[in-house]
Length: 392
Length: 80
Image 1: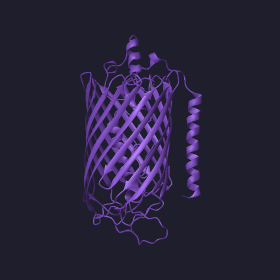
Image 2 (image 1 turned 90 degrees about the vertical axis):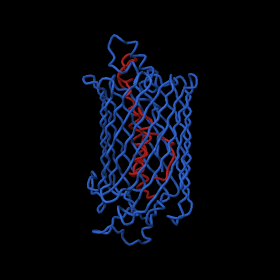
Image 3 (image 1 turned 120 degrees about the horizontal axis):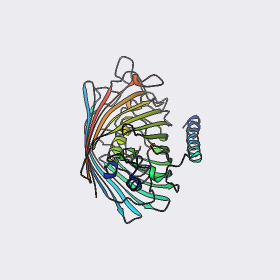
Image 4 (image 1 turned 60 degrees about the vertical axis):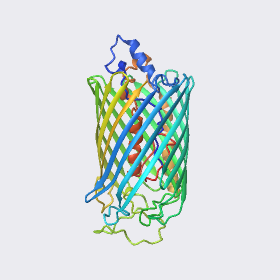
């Protein structure tokens, strides 16, 4: 399974620049062009970034349901992007997650919850070569936990038109995972999982205030997809996933704000269909930028997901026909809402600090376009991020 | 995998490719470099905060059953 984070349109940053802190005036063409040329992916995809960026972020996450505090995560992370001459750049990140808490073995059953603790260390590194109209990137990623190890390779190519208004992205990745279930909590033996994924994307400048992106990704995975800690969980050994992502950013001159809209349509060979809508409004107020956001998600259940016996929190009798079975609530049909707010404060020309808070909730009855899965408790989470970026 | 799933996945992929091709071919009125001041604003970037993007994709990947659309080769985890 994947947690993709090598972005299709390359790195860009919210660190404010002197030239973009205030709306550009018509007479200041030079400053505007300079600002445009300074951003990779918009006007100068063929040049390495002009300065380096260092980012630090601390993340706190907790989730819960009525009557049960579930997982708590503390997670510091580090990011670095640096040019190497005019034609190369290196980008990497490192994150350490510390998880602890309790998680149900089936559905949202409190009586089935078992204690867990885990540590995860993950890193990625990408080297990028810039040509006149093309950018080529090669990346590696590694993640290790007490009971899981993942290695990934990726390659992508971005081609831009002469006016830099159109960029096409092509990319592929390979992931090799090893699952080593903790013998104290699972009877499963060591297993493996491998997947290939592909991306085709188009980024298009539409007007002086509109930019859109369309990405199509497809992943083909083979191997062990079951959850070794869930009750009798047995999932197919192949999984194909397709996602179509549309993103549209529009700047409004009248108020100086920017609306960021995204829509993702998803389907996979577990028979899950999902749709995810994201809306963010970035409003500069003096030098500070405030961004409220909302995200709506809906998904159907996997074909082998089983509901609890009505009126109980007990899974139904297990048989070997059909051969696949899961009482994992994440495979159920539900809808989810996230509401968040972010504040970015620049400190001088090189530093910016940010803070973000999100509230998340998923419920069966919130599914759009069909019935949600019955018999599950609402699932809620809060996550908080504080960070800083330094450009040098 | 059932044949119907395979064909529907293939259909989605083909539809997406057509959309991409149509977008690339039809093009748009060219925006000149000196008109890109607003486009260059940090809030117009698709993933302006790389650590935030990594974290949030990781959260949703581990709590929902859909993923993908953003890139390739991020690596897996035992969280799902």
